[in-house]
Amino acid sequence: MKEEKLIMLRGQSVFAPYISDFVRQKRALGCKYNAAAEALNMFDSFCAGLGVTEPKLTEAVYEAWCRKRPCENETTHQVRVTYIRQFSRFLYDNGLDTVSSFHPLPRRSKAFVPYIFTKDEIVRLMDAVDAHNAIPIPQTPVRHLVYPVLFRMLYGCGLRASEAAKLKTSDVDLDAGTAVVRMAKGGKDRMVAMSDSLVRICRSYRMHEEIQAFESEYFFPSRDHGYYDTSTLYADFRKYLQFCGIPHRGRGKGPRLHDLRHSYAVHVLNGWAAQGKDLYVCLPILQRYLGHARISATEKYLQLVPDAFAQVTGPFESRFGGIFPEVADEEG
Image 1 (cartoon, rainbow, N blue to C red):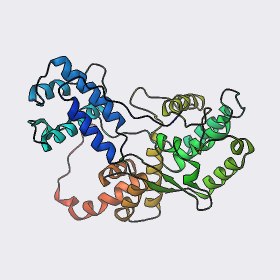
Image 2: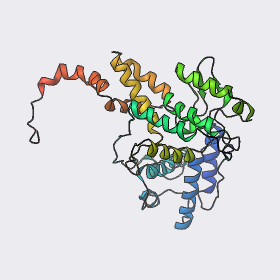
Image 3: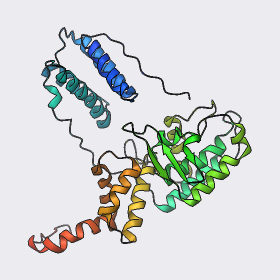
Image 4: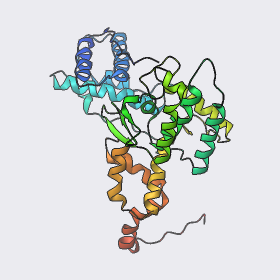
């Protein structure tokens, strides 16, 4: 896969010049803003279809856009609305009539319940990756070497799939045991550290004559010398799950490829809790490592770590637990 191209704007409605200015401003700040451009193209067509004649984002137009569509999941719905809220604020800041920018986002009913792999399941999954890539395939000349390392990197560094896929060789320092993730979510760079075992695996991989002879700027090159698409990685991930006997629980319930990242975070917190570390001190470290913009995103993992959760809630219980009366549980 080649470098991602910028999505072009179509310009059909009265909002077209404002959309163009808005996206140009975002891209001038270094953001590709492609997902937003797709959403804004849809909004542009939507407004043209409604016959909007003035650049006013009225309540009626906004509410019609925010209406959840059939078969649209909550995440897609919320993201679609988010981009138009951002555009609405841009209009407001530029003196145009819009009040919808201050409306709240649609509420999400789903709780944060990722699938957390056990250590045994991680071992079984990696064994499945190795088994399926034991023999080279002519159509994908280096995938049998790439995949075993790439999937270990996903879990071992807690990377998003797109971050691992787009890692460049120049950004991986196997002497220091670090990798720089460029332009991650939020448009920021960050450095991640690798364990000694992962460094050894990566060194062996990079020293392989087939990898050295395969010209690509990417650390995990695909067959066209670019990087792997995340949809390809996910499709293969599902095959490996089935092979190692880890059942998929259905659409939206996982395990998802992204759950390797969630598992990494929970396992790290478990380790810190077992060592008796102060999680109030450690949590910002994990936040920075994972590249979360807000500490609240990292705090969600605490509810998935019994030892860590007890460490956080324990002081509260010891000080105030006796204030609240016990309630009989009829179900036992």
